Length: 214
Ligand code: GDP
Image 1 (cartoon, protein in one colour):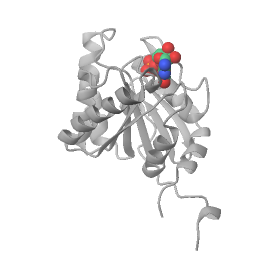
Image 2 (cartoon, helix red, strand yellow):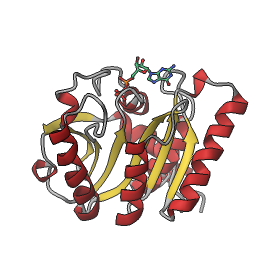
Image 3 (cartoon, helix red, strand yellow):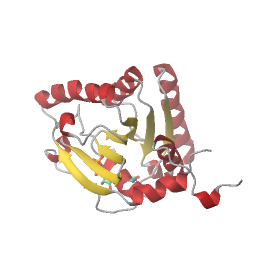
Image 4 (cartoon, protein in one colour):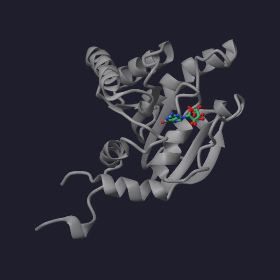
């Protein structure tokens, strides 16, 4: 039986803010299934979480730099959750904070048993910046599946958007991890179905029973 994107759509609509923590060790118990969202600030990570969860105010859009340094947990059901990871490696983040996350995030990726995958947001006009390359390398090294959303594809025509996707796909082919990439627009709600299909797979969601043929 294959995972069903509609089931992921239904699940994410139930997202509720659970807790915001400054350290991975303060996250909820490491059981069930977890999917993390990562991305440079302004890549549209909050907008993507809101679009996928069909809730405008869920992840704060354009959070202040202080709050972006927390891990924010959204509970989906009793055994499944999303974790919005802090931005790291950006100009506005202090050197001390950067060094902290460059240790803490790979440890989280390596040790978090419930982590099924990482969704990495990039602005399609500025893909593969150094922090993105780091996240790709960390996921490959720790064996965590990665799915990249090339967000703001509404800002590019079809040709340039396809070219950006190709460029990233080629970089992923070299990284030898389990990684995929798609174009996405949180603003125009483009690419949602493809993203839900990936999330349905990671969250072990099956089609509703009335959709199953005997
Ligand atoms: P975050 O810092 O990564 O959480 O990014 P935000 O979600 O706060 O978005 C940063 C800016 O990009 C905001 O002004 C959003 O309105 C804008 N934005 C986010 N997604 C899209 C998109 O798909 N298309 C366009 N054109 N703008 C977007």
